[in-house]
Amino acid sequence: MNSRELSLGGLRVSGLRDGFFSLDGGAMFGVVPKALWSRSFPADERNRITLGLNSFLVRGGGMTVLIETGIGDRMPARLKELYGLVREEGLVGALTGEGVRPEEVDLVVNTHLHFDHCGGNTRRDEEGRVVPVYSRAEYVVQRGEWEDALEPNDRDKSSYLPDNYLPLERDGRLRLVEGETRIAPGITVLPAPGHTRGHQAVKVEGGGRALFIMGDMVPTAAHVRTSYVMSYDLFPLETMRQKKRFYEQGLAEGWIFGFMHDPEHFFGRVEKREGKYAFRPQVIEPTAG
Ligand SMILES: [Zn+2]
Image (cartoon, rainbow, N blue to C red; front, side, top):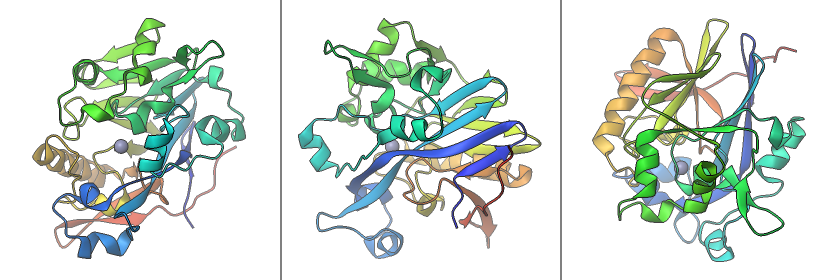
């Protein structure tokens, strides 16, 4: 069984999905040969693998916090087909299932501003204007990521779609942070560069336990090994350095890890076996309340 709920003291974390999409398996695993990665991710006839569009909802301490917003409902048909996008109720539907309305969300965190992490930040209203979905929320982004999204480089330019983030600034909903920042009781964002320069991870702490949400640093459970780094990463050696740094801290402090693109696991453990890092599923546990 795979858990999608976690209790950390007074905080309750729920793993939710905007849907699933597909990316080239080779690009997802960088230098790792297909003979190895295809054991955990079988490729389709276009060499694509299916990934989750995972989000985490954190409730408690008087706050409702959403980490990542998925792809959202504004993707053009051509790109939907290219990315094999499968959305049914979408993230807003999943939130409704949890009894949360978009206007009840206090904070939204984007680990970075690639479309598969912030596409659900905004929607098109009746007049055709693109507006924030979470109308009362502050959206938390690292300043370095924001600057790069305004002036993206040619390598990952196609992942930065301005309608996903410019309306936040226009409507005064953007909160830029610099470096490690406590954004809510028990919730801290931490720089975790590599995938992009301004990429951030999120740590949620309560009741003496911690969940570390890794964003695209370690997108799936199959990416736990240090050298399993995506070709998309702008600074792969930096990704590897950050993975080791956070794993070591997590092993010492007993962290649970959160995965942004795993199609099955929201949560898991990282173990060290014969000097190599390995994934272990998080056992299901009862939720408080
Ligand atoms: Zn991603």
